[in-house]
Length: 481
Image (cartoon, rainbow, N blue to C red):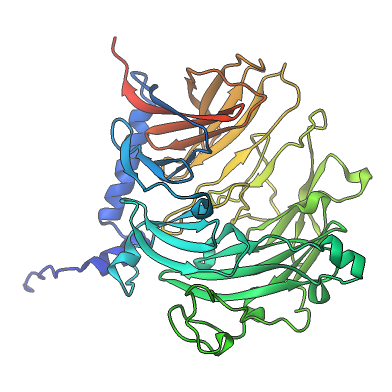
């Protein structure tokens, strides 16, 4: 008889690798726990009850179990049974005010140079052109980099583990117009890697290179997307554009030997684009709105011509051929067109007015969100918003996909403006079957903006009324008989 094999010890890195491959281990146990939570959540003796509310005169933000008040200065955790204050940063002056922020969580199976690089953090952009990396658990500063002036907007390129910062668009001053001076620079784009935080470079978006009608740019999936005033969108390979690289904290010849990321020199423009790079893809579309995703790649858009108003077109990215069932009609009774999106669960489906459209000719994988993705360390959630101009009708307002429980949360309102009521409908993501209905306690005034987040055992509703904001938190509770 052969001797019995001895079990060998497995280190953490190997366990994480096995988990990513779906081999049974702690990762499987976690998924089993989520299945148990889903079952408990759908039991008749369980319901979501409102447990907490807080108002603010500034915008309220929710992300990954945390609610941020006062421009990210005040943070509350929603992980426990009731929200509690996690930290409150010292008050900042108007010049140091946080303009925009992204939540960053590193992958568990990646070894980074510093222990602090593994800390969940906020990437915060301030009014005085500093980029801070702040601990999401304590509010303490972990790192800071000085940027060149006038940067204002943050955005993710999740698949590349990078983020970008856009500057304000440069416009000609009255004196320049009077003197006949043409401003060729539209804006600047600063691109960073996040694990660890490192500069890729700063590039100039120039009319002489990309055309005089440039209106906006975004970076996604390693592609630079440029919108034009003639309603066309052109895509370029960002890898093709990158030339010289910089290193934060090191001297650069572009700064005449000064240190990259230090004040007052900041980060120089190191990516020069002398000629327009090859165009990977171009399409003319209404409102410069195009979504690209899937394998094989397809795109959704609305042609800019009046004859196509009220339709969504779904075409192959390779040859622009129309997909089967590739023209979907919108609800033209609304001032805001209805939404159509690649489903974020990689299932090959499309969400259009909550109807699953099976286009047998293709499978969609990667959606384009309406709201900026904020986490690179886990499967990202997409949040879709739809508006309707007829307050007298029941309408779907928000669709929230809970990827870990595989549930779709749909907000439906009763159509009354000031004292309207809202209900959260939980649907099985695979079949679309309605599993339960949750009534929100507070009224839903359809004349103001609303956000709803469904995060496992927590529902967060953020609303705006006039100049005030309010956050309502619901938790899963057992119903007492």
